[in-house]
Image (tube, rainbow, N blue to C red; front, side, top):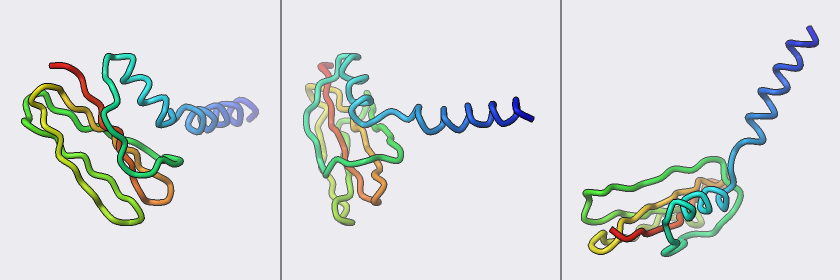
Length: 103
């Protein structure tokens, strides 16, 4: 019985404590050679995140939600590859970190 409880506690704590912060995610991409180009939206506590990138697309669209309103901006990939890190906040809004890397 104690072993079951102990294992459940480990699983629960791992699920709560392992989620990286937005800053940790951005720092991980910076360590891979990417540079921050622009931040859109307001930062805050996140529930989850996603990424958008393509080596073949001519442009990448960054979209975020600020005060319930969706906004977008297009980034050309003419001279740089573009990476959009999209963060979904606990209040329903989103912010994005646009990063670039030389082709």
